[in-house]
Amino acid sequence: MKVVSLYNIKGGVGKTTFAVNIAYEAAMQGLRTLLWDLDPQGSSSYILRIKPHIKGDISQLLDGKKPLARLIKGTQWPLLDVIPSDFDLRRLSSLLEAKKTQSSKLSKSMKTFGREYDLVVLDCAPEASTVSENVINFSDLIVVPIIPNPLSINTFEMLLKFADGLTGKNPGILAAFNMVDRRKHLHKQLLEKYLNRDPRFLRMYIPASSSIEQMASQRAPLETFSHRSISTTAFADLTTEILSLIT
Image (cartoon, rainbow, N blue to C red; front, side, top):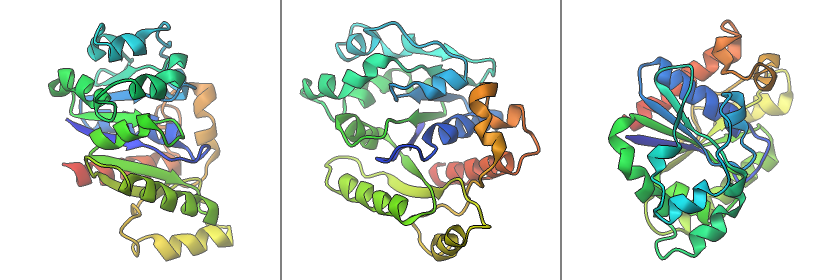
């Protein structure tokens, strides 16, 4: 089982869009895939039409009263399952801080069903917290969606420093440009500066497109309703690149 986390300290950069489409594309490539929605807002769960769990599931999980596998729900795609969000996740950091093994508690919970999935995709909340430490400790790769502007790149640098200060596992952390509009001089300039020149950046990027904005209203992965979109092709190529790095 490999774990890919979509994570950024900064919000509004497209983590959920990445998580849903990467998980879907991996499942379509034949991988048994689990998407774990770790964001209290529950956007991935909403797009995939999975209702949130009842309050208290997270605390029961950390107390060992409920195995993680019991929280899994299937989707209409046979190889794609989801652990939906719960608004109670907003308390997850404080709950973890009360545990002796706070930085590895979630990874221990995941080991109970590790053989059932080829890939686990995490949609993470935009925060630097104990949850973030857990995510870093059990990820094989962290993908950081960023918009091509100096503020997003600066936040990416901050995230790298945050990860460097942690003890434990040291996964690869790579940025991926999102919402790219090559008609904009700044976007074009930054792509030329970083793509194929900076090893911290994935080669594939996601162009801006109106079809991506429709995911929330369609409540489905991009390819299921916009097969010919350039962004659909981009997500398929990005997923292939990501999988090549962890297999």
